[in-house]
Length: 504
Image (cartoon, rainbow, N blue to C red; front, side, top):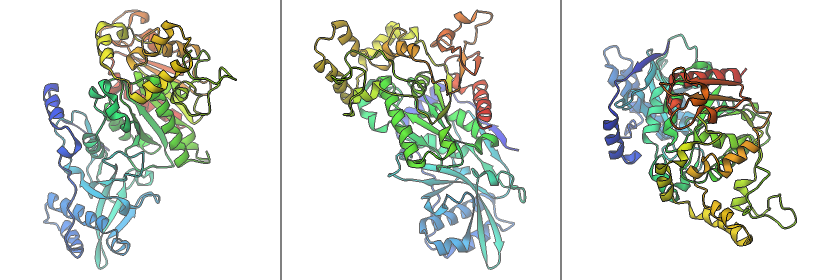
């Protein structure tokens, strides 16, 4: 049984100081296992690791250094001598770059449960960097493994178990040690994510970091779950959900978690267009023939503003297009073939490979927060990236007779403008329903002190129940929580139950 360890909570003030001090991933020690200066040391180190009088720390260090040396060498003959891979055939352990002991991963300031299991062997993290793969961030992708040293014949051998391989779920003789949280902690702490606040104000600096990323090697036998964060957030917002759900073998064996990252001040139509393109690129790379059923039933999970982006993946553009949109003379309602950015933003269709959507605290009808003075102040300092501005302004040049009020509305395209109850985006979503072929679910926060209030008066302080409610949802769960309900156990449990049903 997986043991859940909850570390002591740390004050938010202390966390803030630490986060602001550690400004980049390179500020943290790498924890990479050092390689031996001679490959001949591998055998003796492995023998020492299983000696009865060897301390656990020394044993784990010897195993990790031996494996790191094998990986660094890329020598197939040497690896056959000392290494046996017990995992998915699509994965080559020698393709990784580094080895990290799970026990060496920093646990301070980790207030979530730590999912690990005692047993034989050494839990490790394999780390792969690949600058040519658009779906891996600059830190790399991780794979949790357990190394069990066996003394067989002349040489000791490392049996390296892939912990994400369903076939290794029931390894009983002997029961192997497992650590599922260490790779998540390691990757999320070191990833150079888009800053939550700075990226709102000055998105230009972070446009090249927009993208879809996976945490582990791609597995064609698992369904991708795409997590889309909300305003003033980044993929780290999903750490608790990924940590909890990946600890469940039923979910771990059938799903793979991906995250979409974007600066949250830019126009939502643009962010949605980028998400759409990333999903299409995923399809082209991993399922160009459309024959893999797992990639034809992708699950989207969106929190708040991320829920709006998810909705735009399963909806059609509004028939009433913005009057300033560049359009051809011969067909006033069809997009041009020129690939104009504004056209790509406002012309779209449901993506057929999306199999289900889970909306968490999503303002389908907008939020009154967008009208507040403080919101307007924040909105006034947000800078729309130049490429988006130029594309939108090109519509004004081509349509000089546009009424003044429509022309000024063009400049109200920042994300805060987009979630105003009377914005073009919100009105468009009400006009065009979600695709009837895509089941969807709602998880709605009703506040911690809602008591017996009627549903139309409940709110999570940001999004009201009325705005988040969808009458045709397959299921709806209300959670007595504020707007960050995507981090609550009730929400995570509900997402897990929906995923289990989706796989049947």
